[in-house]
Image (cartoon, rainbow, N blue to C red; front, side):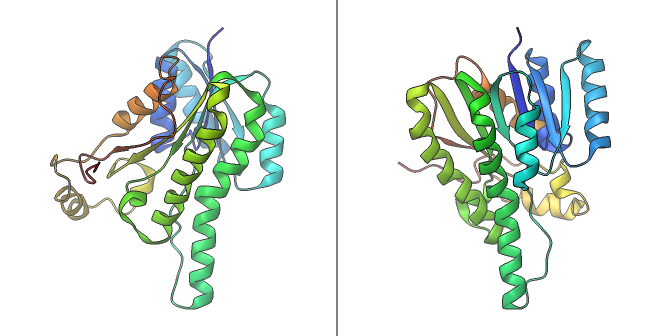
Length: 244
């Protein structure tokens, strides 16, 4: 029996790249998102490439408790891997105190509440040993307003949950990508000027690719990654250098 992963936000961007890599590694993957046609198209592409029915999908807003409860009830086979990829950086006004409060609350809801809801609902479906990987951001490591604060909360959640689940042989880690321009996150902002400006800050002198992020997630999701847990692993070309 193939190992089974679930990837939120699995129809586009990093989530699609992660799904593609997991399928290539032999896993079956359930992708979750709000846009059914996007999920269908992704599944058809990946199944055709794999030559097998490797990908199915569920439509759910992972910030909605009722939708997440229904999602969990719809999972027919046990899971081996949970990848919490869904999130976002909402473009909302923040000129007034009320607007600023709305922006911070929405950013937290998209990036933190979504992860906690899905994890709590699906943890009973996760076989032991199991793997949980959350997608964080370099923004959490160097500060960047509401989005950076929300991703920092994800990092703190990861370290706490890792301690709780270690005795059950479930690993919990975060992957913190840097500038990965070929994703929906940068859609509409991906100008040559922005790419040049962002790349100039990266010691390695280039941006990253979705495939590189997917490779790191695939490692952390693998059966032989059982001794790595509670870690926030940066993949950003040296944009933030570790200190002992």
